[in-house]
Length: 187
Image (cartoon, rainbow, N blue to C red):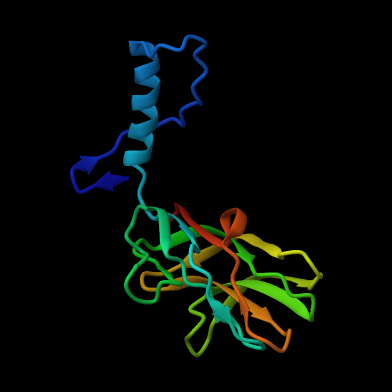
């Protein structure tokens, strides 16, 4: 593999820190340096998005969840200005994708979460679906995935939800709320 600065050397995956002493010595600092070096030479996207503001989810439609918070967005695939529900692929290849949808309490109907590629386009691809009945007094958290998908530049990934309570329900931001994780795993 090459980078804009030339060929890269092989990197081993570093092990987690295990030093018993509370003081960081040069040995422990080298372990941290090795880990950061491994991550800095890794190509491709890596992103963790979360929903931090409740949004209305209308009944009977696949509705994308807006993600306002970027825990990390290594490839710049998420915009916090427009289409905030989307992670847009900048590096082509295989991606590991997972999500969790969280909705407010409502005991009527069912809830579903979906991982979708190009969900607003003519030929969307549904990667995974989780569906469950609503329960009174319980906020449904619906994990979906993980799935591996081969994505091209400008493809986009969304976490979408569907509910059929007959009323608008908000997303829940309690206990972490909804999240979308997209990780490039290779070409």
